[in-house]
Image 1 (cartoon, rainbow over the protein chains, first blue to last red):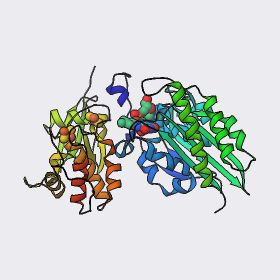
Image 2: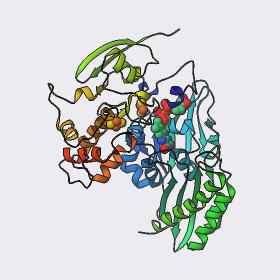
Image 3: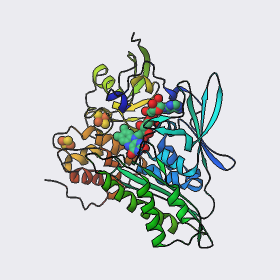
Image 4: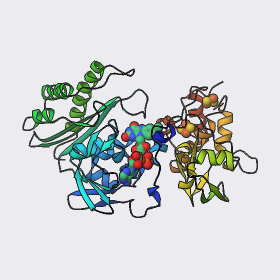
Length: 253
Length: 163
Ligand SMILES: Cc1cc2nc3c(=O)[nH]c(=O)nc-3n(C[C@H](O)[C@H](O)[C@H](O)COP(=O)(O)OP(=O)(O)OC[C@H]3O[C@@H](n4cnc5c(N)ncnc54)[C@H](O)[C@@H]3O)c2cc1C
Ligand code: FES
Ligand code: FES
């Protein structure tokens, strides 16, 4: 809607999906939680199924705008819109979610999040396709999560942010996922920073090193809200904090 | 090329049937077609909160919603709060706490607070501030608005009630 209000988009045809039944659901399936495209962000925020099985998504929800925004904004809308600062795409990328899209002539296909987000507001959706569902893998036992952001004002889109999901087993990091937002034309998965951690014991030095790798791997834009160097510094700090927090929440409980 | 679409919706308990352009926002529909000008329009892109109304009880931006999207819905606007010219307890508390100056932002704040108090009748000050974080006021400095909400909810307040 803001794109229309600001005349950044002027489509010839606009389809109101809220009239299409059967796109508003949260379902627990084998290994994932399936969320229908028209499920409101506020519904996800309050969902106990999501809270217990996809905690990173729950953690991200309050960071999206404000109550009145989340009452109307949808999981499908945010994913298809693909804002490089948006939280839901970041969670999808971090968790290797699958995005289910459909078209009348070709039927359904499933696109991994890693292939879905292609550029500024640009996705793997073809012009005749609609997004119907996002499948978020269920967090394995021992997983801790965190989403850290720097915003100018509470509720604004993040200037930059970092999502982390860490699983520890017997005192070692068994799995680490790190995604940064606001740093490029898509959310960015920081694989080198993840690799740095897997197999090692959690330590302040390791988190510091990961933060530094994540900051080095991104090339954030410079604008009146902050320079490239400032944003890179923020990424370093936010990744470190997200790792500290998610690790402290991880492990067998 | 602009076709119009029939819309049937309930606003503050009154059913309306209208024929509107699909591109007309709910805010413009309320203000221009129904002459309910209490819903204010500030930024027109979802940021300021002045246009907040309740759609089926949930706070939403009427500037980011087309009228044709709320067919069959129950809409509540600021005009729906008072009863027979009698301010409701929230409105009364706002007056007593000096919760507004120019009043431009007030309808949006009150609708957002109405949703909050319906869901959580005794919010803490932190919960009030979180709920109101999406509404902008250029006059009061917010303290007196927060105090007004806490007064309406019968909660203690550290916020200065404004003078
Ligand atoms: C003031 C404000 C602050 C915000 N802050 C944040 C924030 O901090 N973080 C954040 O992540 N988001 C934020 N948002 C965005 C918001 O949360 C919504 O995600 C966003 O507005 C999308 O809204 P929608 O779901 O109604 O989708 P729409 O606006 O209806 O659609 C968005 C785009 O996706 C397309 N689309 C929608 N659904 C589908 C589908 N099923 N299949 C194919 N294409 C589809 C539409 O054609 C359109 O191009 C903010 C919005 C506002 C107004
Ligand atoms: S006018 Fe709708 S949010 Fe500002
Ligand atoms: S009272 Fe003037 S903007 Fe809030």
